[in-house]
Image (cartoon, rainbow, N blue to C red):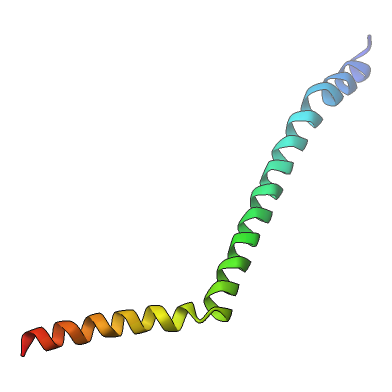
Amino acid sequence: MDVKATWEYVKARYLNRYLGEKGQGIVEYALILAFVVVIAVAITNAGGLKDKVSEVFTNITQSFDNMKK
């Protein structure tokens, strides 16, 4: 085998396989992260979760203020 044929064999056998899988893994993690962010934004905006959490903290603050009196 000549050098070029050997290089093509190594490239096809090892380099493309490992580099392709690594890139695929990164893309999969990015898609999962994007999905989680979209779901989190949808829950906080549409469900009124932001307002309810704010209300809970306001009630806690008022309770502490009432305990000081």
